[in-house]
Image (cartoon, rainbow, N blue to C red; front, side, top):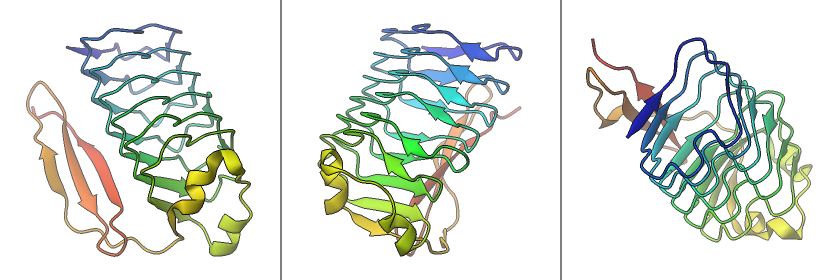
Length: 212
């Protein structure tokens, strides 16, 4: 099942869709500003969600235990992330952290994401919270949008030791191939397209609008 929202909705409250286990897709409104604590927690079949550029805050545990999510790209407008926000999303493979004013990836944000292999981190990030990537033992590639010296200044403690074992790719110009359609759009649902950098393998995904 899918859920969509009226154009005037600017916030989704705490636990609004918690444990809606039949929910597979959420189309968020274009003017959405905040998502409350545990808003989609335990939506185990939620496999696709795209965040509007108006979004500024996502609360604690908002998408924890969404065990069908495989890809998350947060818009640059996000300045506040709660702890445990994507905790135990056990099929999550790739994450794009927003550029902008966010400076710390919060504690336990991706803890338990045991299939996570790639993370894109912008240069505005200066610290990781406690156990941000705990139990992410498959994390092998970190793409940092800054210099080597910038990466060396980021505070990383022993609770995030998996980061030390990953390959860190500092800034270069991505050479993306042409877009490939992953899921075709139709008159009643959006689609998904993908483009992969031929240098580092970084994958960028985008939503394909519904056809009319």
